[in-house]
Length: 487
Ligand code: BG6
Image 1 (cartoon, rainbow, N blue to C red):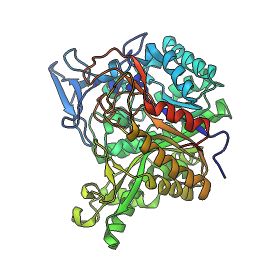
Image 2: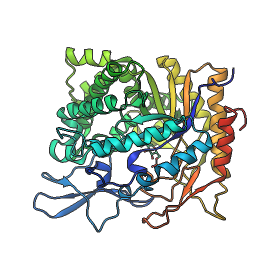
Image 3: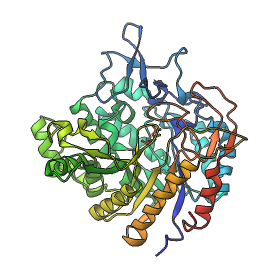
Image 4: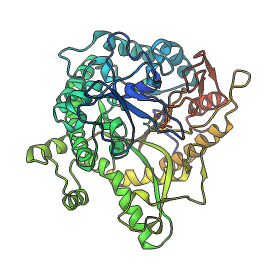
């Protein structure tokens, strides 16, 4: 059986990585706007004012700890890639036209929360921000491209971090729901596919991105995730009430996980690591905290507000589909970690796989494994909302011969098709990350490119911003036109 006629081929982006216009038309600062650029060697930094007015900066890392009284801000002498992105704010018509030319059926984007509620806790939304997205949705409609909107893609209004400490504070749930109600109502009939939080499982990796936390430790991350689960569940209910046609999904960063050998120690470790990810989809797709997580919290002395009322909220707010990003796989070894409970520092090189220039182990078969695994576990429709290769491209004669990207995508699509056609997985669509070059999330670089469309801009903000079609542009055009038959 071939892919369905309605299969949603397309690409994915996030506002903070492409829009720019960070302070235009009433937009407030978001958490992304106070993170300066990094690279492979230097981590990105959060910049802030100390309580005494002096300045400080701290690397984004799992457990950062900004000084008491610090307020995040941006400064003229630092470079913040989100401020200009690729200036989609002014180029969206040209860009959408190119995506339409490729035959896109679906375009994933995020709404920049601080464009709608500049401070997060404002009484009224910013009309200019709402209008900007109206214009984008109208433009997409012109070309019959279905939008998919991520409600929060690492773009919390920075005021929610500074004034409330981010998602550790349950007041943020209400601000988020007010924002959801505003956009669900305004874009009713224009947007059907929603994702409540991008890669919600990244809370344990970069809590500033995900949770806008000023201080992060195990307890605050668990609380922030709990608050996001409640917010998401309530948002699902609200979206269905406002428009029963709405389809609301969750989104996790996924990838296959292998134990290094058939030694049961390695396999147990792989299972534990797997569970760390599945915990998020378990709660959002099944509607309750799994026993293994409650046991872990008990052991670690972590508490969450799991009242009967909150349990009901989770139960009634299960998502409609499971979205996930897939880039690579990971191999874990109990010997390398020295202990099977040490899940973090146990990753080893997989000798069977090639590595990308940015250290991702390329594994197309892993995608088939993940698709089967998620579908068997939840029996809900899946959506690959990110997949792609970050690579350094060279623009020669106004194009890029990116055969390496074509090769990566082709192999992943082949495995995806096996999962659908041979294994019977229900899959709604396939979106290529960064379909137009944009700023990298982890390193903040432009040099790491994923797109079919090259954008002339470098790591330091230089360049004409002109757009050029790469070789992969034509290739993907033909993939979509043949519904995945010609690869
Ligand atoms: C996902 C994120 O984790 O991976 C995107 O949802 C991100 O925002 C993408 O850009 C690729 O990561 P990076 O660091 O290469 O941009």
